[in-house]
Image (tube, rainbow, N blue to C red; front, side, top):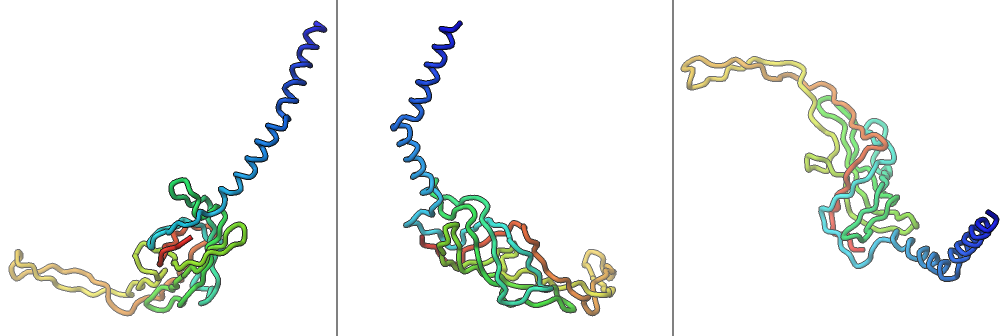
Length: 200
């Protein structure tokens, strides 16, 4: 029994010394040197115009309380990579400005534009860009839809198949109602589209 304990102690001692041998410490040091390099954006790469970046808005934007020239920021939640090369690291911030904001009015919803002009990397370095907040309509304007009309009118549509008879149909008519303010809440996932190629 005592001999078995001695063997166990000797085995643990050998294992301890082998783990902390100079060769293992050197290997660990190499690993520490390599890992930080992966967080740096690759150089010599051009990202084409029209590329989309998926980011999260860091503050609420509203046509109700914001104004033109207010700053907008959105954070990158995961590395943007091309062929295993990190292009834009996680926690980078897209920064830009609200442009041409207009509050809601009778007949139209509030609207605004958002342009992005720089990416702030986690190490503080800045990459200049030309990009905008993308909306599915293909327009750069966020909001601005026409509001519904207050009333309706009856219109007769004549159809050849019915001879002299026609089809009565109600159509919107009259002045438009007050539009609604346009808002994008903080934390919303948005798309940023490059307006020009981005050279790194």
